[in-house]
Image 1 (cartoon, rainbow, N blue to C red):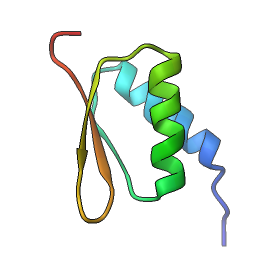
Image 2 (image 1 turned 180 degrees about the vertical axis):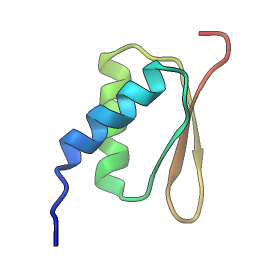
Image 3 (image 1 turned 60 degrees about the vertical axis):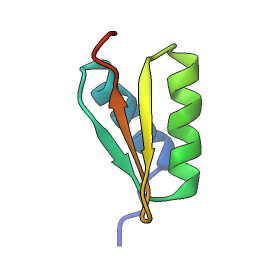
Image 4 (image 1 turned 60 degrees about the horizontal axis):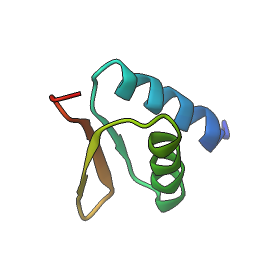
Length: 62
């Protein structure tokens, strides 16, 4: 079983957001890390919560 580092996952998802791609996270810890990464990088992102997690979608105005 491979253990994935949440910070590595966060960095990959932030990179996707910077490229204008949407990302999805299921765990509350990963969602928290992505939100902090969005703030630190001053990204304009829309959050959509679902029963299973959260979608992060870059705003088209950015």
